[in-house]
Amino acid sequence: MTDTQAQDDLLLPRIARGDAHAVQECLERFGPLVWSLARKLMRDVATVEDLVQEIFIEVWKSAGRYDADRASEATFIATIARRRVIDRRRRISRAPGEEVIEEGMRGGDDPSLELVDVRDEARRAHEALERLQPERRKVILMSVVDGLTHQEIATVTGMPLGTVKSHIRRGLDEAAQLLRPRRGEEEA
Amino acid sequence: MRSTFAGWDEVTLGRAADLVTGALSLEDELDLRSSVDPRDLEEFELAAGELALLLRTEPIPADSAQRIESAVRLELQRSRKPQGHHAAGRRSSAGRGPVGTAAPPTPAAPSPAPATRLGWVVALVLLGWIVLEPTLRGPRSAAEVLASAADAVRAAWTRTDDPMAGEAAGEVRWSDQAGVGTMRFEGLPVNDPAEFQYQLWIFDASRADGVERPVDGGVFDITGPVVEVPIDARLPVGQATMFAITRERPGGVVVSDREHLLLTAAIPAS
Image (cartoon, rainbow over all chains, first blue to last red; front, side, top):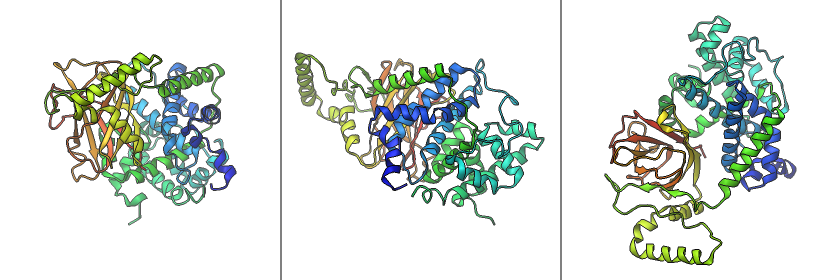
């Protein structure tokens, strides 16, 4: 992404420079993505709000290290959000009283590429997933996109847990190799 | 044999996959982050983040959006204010810490009253004369070094599931080249130094035993709701990848059993 217009469109460098308007634009543009990632984990709205706040504050703090040659802003923010969601899940997994959405309550019962919302920013991910074996693709969607645990995927699909883990490992390996050399090339 | 991402072996690949799908324990995550090139691992996490863009999104309910925006704005405004009202962390004189290295209140806070400003100046001069070395090593000096260090990084604290972490938040700032850093804590429980102390550990990727033997960053006390503590590493740190806070007996320990691992902060790959 080298042309001036594209650079001007980037929000994270503006946030890093302390542009208050960019903070609001970032919330508007990426709020639904972050909210939806958090909703995959928690049902309680107050907890989701708390998590989304935490994620956006970290986005603001991390904006200065964003590198457009390595990832799109959406990918950068989704990665931060996923880290926070996973941290929260790990923290509450042993804490009684907090409610994690149970198996079957998430939107991953029958994931397929036809069902997902393919936006411009997700085109590369869509193309990479399409190159995976169908079973592998299905498991990756349930795990990475819908946020099901490995055990939940095994229960829903009837696959042995070891097979689920193997599909996730292989699927992520292949997808990461497909996405890696093209990142940067896409942005440049 | 098929090639894997970044040439990782199957075990590493499996742990990285577990990491990005939320199936890895914190302990294993620490080991993983210290045993692979952080840039490779971040690339792997970015790939998972890019796949997550396939999520079918839903709009934020209007009232939730309003509350989130207000809260974020409030936090940003608060973070941009001068830090003078914050309590300074007390670098402990117990155990291995040099006596008299207690951090002074952050003197960078502007005051509306000239008399108060004068008071700060006098206090600074006196501090400089009385305890020159400790003052130079205090948070103001560290902040100045970090402000000019090209490799300075910052990372947010992540709480573990240990209830002793309370509602702690904050961040760590660090420069490998300068060997200087500061930690900011919000909501980490105040401690009685006679009962227990907090201890910092720095995972250094440049050390062969960087995972098993993180560098001792010294013990410190929490004296208020918001605390700034300078980092006082006992050994040179070549490439910090992770900072961790444990709760230890007064004076700290040489090797932590990590029974009470409270906070971690992973340094993002540059």
